[in-house]
Every structure is written in structure tokens, then in C-alpha cells.
Length: 353
Image 1 (cartoon, rainbow, N blue to C red):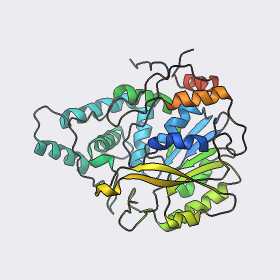
Image 2: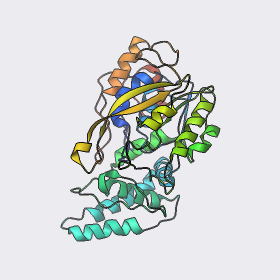
Image 3: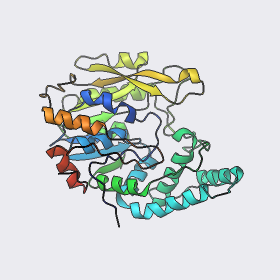
């Protein structure tokens, strides 16, 4: 039996993801439309989908399209959407084998590296289970591949990682019903975008220095030519839809987006992965929009009614969940606004009336 979500509980990403935007949702809020009712939402660089999970539960888009060049990410989302009940026992077996009581560290590593070396057929539930298992047990949830496209991240040091939560994945599956999920490069994203849509883009960031480069998200690194092609795509889209894009504050990127009718904003993020402790801490990131954005006005739209603002604050209090435990959140203490309630109900998730 599929469990019913308690009132007003929030689904957070089921993947750990370096550079995930969960920590920035509060800062993104004033930069985004208050509601997407009657509009589509498109995300061409899906990753863990932190912004998507926030949008689908708080902004009531009429439809959602999720794209990524990483076929393993796309397959996991597709299998959670379509075959979650087949996925769960496979994940349970991975957890049992990894967390066997009394298992030596040597044997645990042998299991991890055996799974890492395995090559289940692409587009299958087995491949999705392997991907999520590796994501939750590898070093810091890092996704990195070599020039052959092979995942090569070492095992992390975790004491009995939970790996997955069945109620969380079932709830995520319900929210994903009706969502289009495709493997696609950003270079092809325009065909998925309709006039009036809202698009959020989170590409691999331009490194701030020669030693901070991490663009091996697929076997083909994300180059400056790709950054420029992405900028050009966004300029073409500027007359068709509203979009918001994240990147680093590298001089090349700041200069790239110095364009008429583009608006630059800056947010503060926590840099969590660095081999040198001094390299961790707060870092400024760039957000570019093709509309002026302030706390009370986005793209020329009227400020949200006070009730909607209150609801947004209530929703922002929901716990976004941990990396291994249940990613369901605490009760926000109030009923959802009608458009949010409608969107939740449409996906089988009902708040208090």
C-alpha cells in the first residue's frame, strides 16, 4: 500500500548533488515569479532537481519538462516516476549488502567497487538502482566520469548510510506523474520550450581558477565554447519566455552576460567540497535573468497578494530533508493557498483544508 503523505509535507531531492540549489531557494524566491499557474516550467540541467521540486510544490506550473545530458540522471528520474515499486527492492538489496552487520571495510569496499564496475543495460530499473546506490555511498555524492564516460568516484566514509527512503521515493513518484523527462543537451532545449514558459538553467559552472575546474559531468567537459553557446541560446529565448540562469562569478562569465536587457544578481552559497579547508565557506554566485527582479516585482508582474506571500514564507519553512534520511518535511502550520492546494491535489498530495 502506498502511504499517504501527512498534511503539508514537502518533497526534497532524493539525490545528493554537488552544487545542488537547495541552499539557495530562499535567495531565489524574490528572483522568480510568485506563481506559474497557466505556464510551463522547463529545466535543461536537471541534476538533483532542487529547484524543480520547489517549483512543482509551490508555484503550480501547468506542465513541467526536465532535461539533462546525463542519461543516468534522466533514467533514475524516469524509473522513480514509472517503476518505483520495482526500484525499491533493488535498492533494499544494495543497502543490505552494503550495511551487513559485521561486514569488514575491505568487503564493503569490494561490494562498492564491484557495483561501480558493473554495467547494467541503460534505461533499466537496475541501472537506476545502481546509480542511486553509488550516489549515496560515494565520496560526498560527487558525480565524475573519466574520458570513457565511466563513473570513477571512490567510496565515501559513511556509517551505515540509509541510501533511500521508500516513503520519500513513492511521494516523489506521485509528484513526477505527468512530468516530461528527456535526455537532451542544452543545445536542443529550445524545442521543448513554449512561448510564455519559465526556464531555470544551472549549467556546469565556469571554474574560478585553474585548480578549481570541475566540468566532467559527462565524458565531454563543459567548455567556454559551451558557455558561449548557452548564452546565445538564452539570448534567442529572451523574447519568448522568462528565464533565470546560475553560474560562477568568473570574469569570463560576468563579461559574457554583460548584455542589453539582461539583469545580473548575486547570491551567497556555501562551498562544501574542497580539499583545503580554507577553500570552503561562503562564495558569491551569479544569477542572470531576462527580466528585472526585485522582492515584490518579477518581470513586470504585480506583487503577489499578501496571502500568497504568507504562504510562500510558510512553504519556505518546510524542512528540505537530509541526504540519506526521509526527505519529508515538518508541518508548516497552515493550509496551503488555493492554487498550491490544487496543484498538490492534482498529484495526490493534499494539504489541510
